[in-house]
Image 1 (cartoon, rainbow, N blue to C red):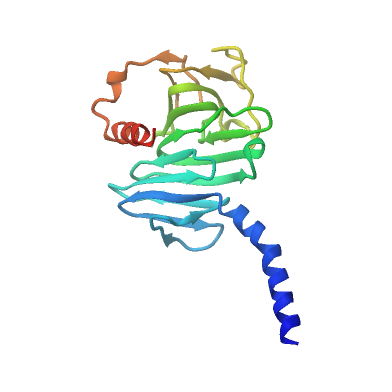
Image 2 (image 1 turned 120 degrees about the horizontal axis):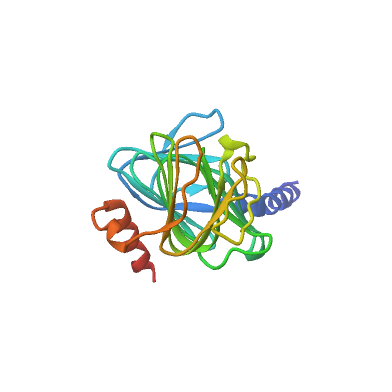
Length: 234
C-alpha cells in the first residue's frame, strides 16, 4: 500500500510540476528599497529579491525604491519610485509563444526586450491613455499624475496606439503602421523609432513623434540607473 501511495503521489507531482513552472514566468532580480505584490482581491505582501512573479501579479514600489523584473527569455522591466504595474498577460512557453502584456497604472517603467518580437509573439505596455506595442527594443514609459504619457525609444521601435480609456480592449493586439501616421482622431497609432519620443496628453490626444537628444537624460537618476544596468548586462 505504501508503494502504491508513493507512486500516486509522484505521478501527481509530475503532472503539476510543468504547470507550476509555467506560472513562474519572472522573478524580482533586483530590489532597492521596498515594494509590494498583490493578486486579485488578496492582500499585499512584501517583495524580496529573487521572489517569483506570475501572470496576474500587481507590483507597487514605494518612495525612493527601484525594482527590476527579469523574465525567462532575459527581457527585463524596471520600475522607478512610486510606480504600479500589473502583469496582465505573461506567457513564456518558448520563443515562438512569448506574450507579455503589462499595465502601468502610474509611475516610470523601463523595458529592455531581448530579441525581436515577431509573428504571434507580443510584448506591450498599456497605460490609461496609450498602448506601446514593441518590436525588439529599449524604451521607457512615464505614466504621469496628470494622466499624460511619455514614450521614449532608445533602440528599436514602438507602435504607440490608443489606450484602454479610449476604447481599446486590455491586452488587445496591436499592429505596426507605416508611419508616423495618424489613422483618425478616435483611432490612431504611430510608429516611434530609435531616439524618438511621443507625448500623449491627459485627454488621450497624441502629439507627433519627435527626436530627442541624449542630453535629455543627464539629470534623470532613473534613466542613468537603467542605462548603467543595461551596459552592465552586455
